[in-house]
Length: 335
Image 1 (tube, rainbow, N blue to C red):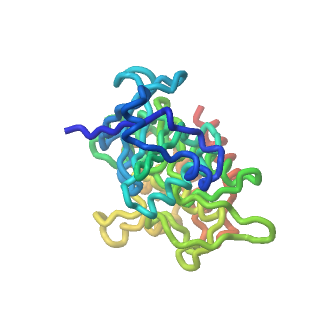
Image 2 (spheres, rainbow, N blue to C red; image 1 turned 135 degrees about the horizontal axis):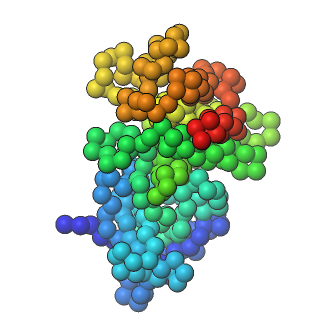
Image 3 (tube, rainbow, N blue to C red; image 1 turned 30 degrees about the vertical axis):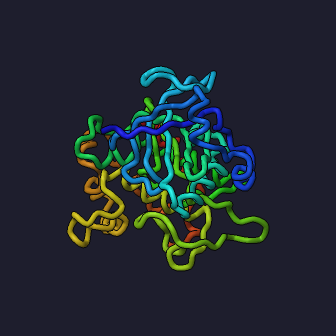
């Protein structure tokens, strides 16, 4: 049976205020609103292809709205939206729900997924986003039944889009550390434009004379940088390291951590480092599905850029503006 939810658009809001004011101004009676409102979206649970492979926040649904009237439409009509529904009673999930509103409700960039609205009905907490029809990068890279293998040029386009998102977040005007850059949080639209999602772990960057912020170590194993794991010190360079891992995944078609490989190949970063002494062996690192689509020179540039991002010392990693420039130059050489 298909799971459905009802989202009351009359009580949806853009998050231009603080989480505290959201809690005080947007609580309402869910059942009473359901009876009185004509603005409910009936949303079906999204299948595994479209949604990220895992969502600790809760379940993800697909619905349809009239984007001008902000009213519900019949399935298949109007604008598709993705609705995240928080697991009820989840304390950590509630904190992530607030973080999503706090950041995505205030930030706009072509390479960030759009938060269209949020809703708090007693214990019912929802987030409504633009729908990303091509799902996540994870789906395309690692699902054996992927119906569209990503070409070299598309992979580089996706990498550039994700890099631009992080560069925007790290800019002095924004100063946000994402802390969750991984393939499952990079979503794709019809044209394979990458949009960074999931700001549940995001934090404001350091200010003043501070070089970092301290926080509990959270995130997905395989993407976190060494100094963050060891000390809890979080910087923009932490995101740069995570992006380096993603770039290697894009290049190799292999997961950051995969226990199905022999023990010396299970950690992607460690495995790649074994091949760096001989540039002619770079071909061994590239996804075999890309055979004939790239030159050795281009592959070398991507690997070397990723390795720079993965430097053990944070100060040796390039900032994301430098990464964007390098990927743009690579894109120009593809044309």
